[in-house]
Image (tube, rainbow, N blue to C red; front, side):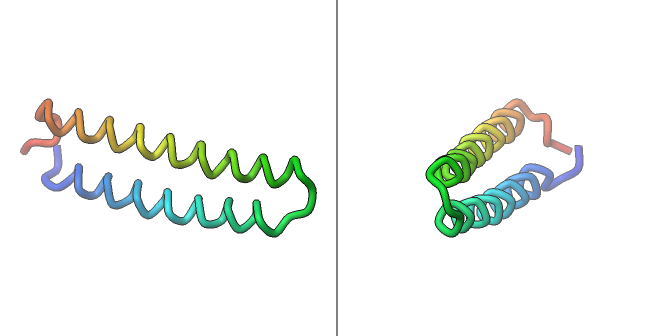
Length: 69
């Protein structure tokens, strides 16, 4: 694999999570209706969970040597 792939993957995941959660939280606050608040808030929480799972996968893959050159 390409050297530095884990660091690149982590950076992309963190930036994506920050952007997506910010947008979803702004929508959750600004829209009208209880179900839209709940839906966008749940979307932000789900985005964080998926980002954590992605970071775990990258960490395990790095430990197994899949990102070694």
